[in-house]
Structure formats: structure tokens, C-alpha cells
Length: 71
Image (cartoon, rainbow, N blue to C red; front, side, top):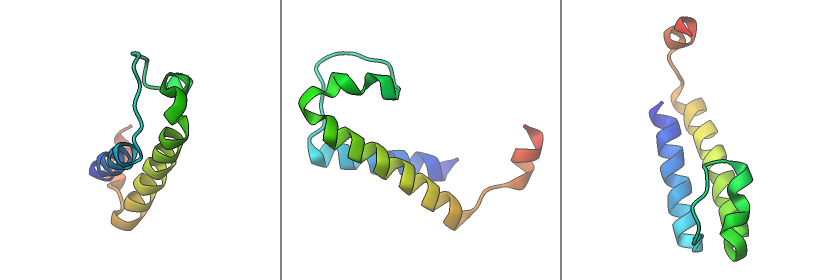
């Protein structure tokens, strides 16, 4: 779980460094991308970095098999 949270933090830093911003409120989904208007490319890059970082961290540090069995 912490690997995914850290991946999200890395993506947030990338979004901030690339200057992604919006002036409207939208839900947290891919359908909300148009609210980023002129910084949509920066946000797409940040989303890709988030997914890749989360996957890599999960692969590197593993996950608990017992949690998967419970669900």
C-alpha cells in the first residue's frame, strides 16, 4: 500500500514541477482531464509517471500475499 502512496507522491511532484494546474473543480478520474486545459500534457505525463512509479515500487518491494487471500 505504501508503494502506491509513494508513487502518487512522485506523480504529484512531477505535476507540480511541470506546472499542471486547473481553475475548476472536477472529480478524480481520467474524464476530468479537460479541466486542466492548457496544462493537460503536463498532467498526462504526471499520470503516466504515477502509474509507472507505483508499479515499479510494488515490484521492487513486493506485496503481502495474505492480504490478497483475505479479499
